[in-house]
Length: 67
Image (cartoon, rainbow, N blue to C red; front, top):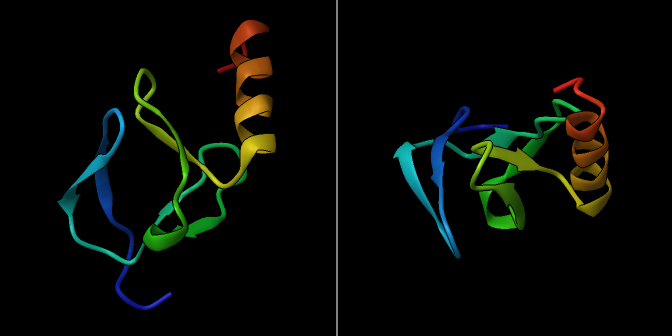
């Protein structure tokens, strides 16, 4: 993806761009997520997720003590 990886500060209900870029990486899969498609993130963990399945997977990891 052109534009490089962005750095964000995740808040409720929005995020702030700390370093400009075109995408962030999913904390679970490592896949790039274009900023205009970013809908899922954790304010507590300051991580982005590609979709609801990735959120669910991260929650399972956290509860199992693996994240």
